Length: 470
Image (cartoon, rainbow, N blue to C red):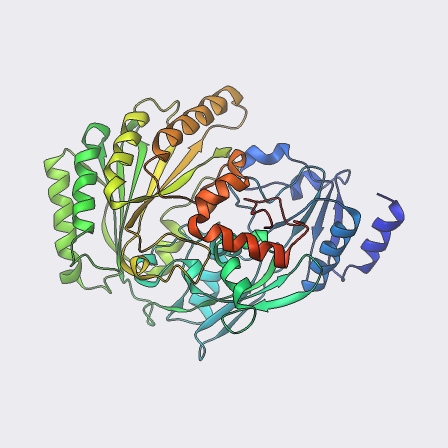
């Protein structure tokens, strides 16, 4: 690429924006991702965008120069898709503007925002309001919402994707459009679940959800654990309870196969938006306490009432700057226990004690969602659980990493026949192809391929779980 072209691009950027080259002294620091496994992926350029016009310049430059391009928002992508070897990264970290319209019930934010910053802003400036998504404050707003966006209140209000009301996006031809139910509704459908395939989203509006306006502790929280040999019996009891007609939508039980004090087992996160009402919380706590007594479990966090903000800021806290590998998929009711039994058997031979498998419940509002409205097909077809691998190892331990990756691939392959769909935000780098995209998007894939041909016929945005243009 000619230096004159690069210099012209630099001169066109807005004040405060910057083009970093791989030879710049601060490039390695600015190229760090949350997942350190992808530090080895080195782009040629990073555009530190300050506004929408900078993003348009970058898209036009990459398209006209024939250089690969990918967006970077929260830097949290587990498959490393927010970096591209030898290409251009459009980094939105400095685009963090937020606005709230309480009358309309919406929050609009830019791509550099993470859930922790949004939670703080709403708590301080708009008490009584929150948004869906983000079980950890370090997760990026855009990446989560555009790829489904799970959160503690999804059984009550749907996923982050379900709650998007509008998106402003830079398309492959450099044009900027707003997608909503009223404007470009076909693009709105595609962005909600398959967003990176269709452009670079620069602004996203989502519904505001209610929390206690007086900011009182309203969430009943607890952690408990059982040894691995009891995991199947405990999980079966959790599944049976979750299928009861009186199981509340505002209760989330999130099990995880994990090591606690060097011992493999099943840990359960209990999160109940019970409004501080002990009578509402008591029946479900009693059920869990009986499982603890019956199956040799123990509490690892005493029952407590916490505020919404405390839950969002402190409950998970995923470890940053470690190497990760992942895979994930959705089970139907008839296959849930088959998947879990496979996991328990495999987890007995997991190569290290850092790796875990997270289970996120569906049902509630998710069982009632209209899957014709978003690219994400999972919901009312008896989808019951999302299974997701958090396969970690220590930095500087490549042999351990190879063993963990091999175990994850083997375990996921054993599970896959009993999964209905793959999970976009739980996809590994070696699954990012059109064949696996069909597994993720299911019956929506062909429609998405047609929309890809309409909005990105040259497949400029292909560094993702790529949907090939029809």
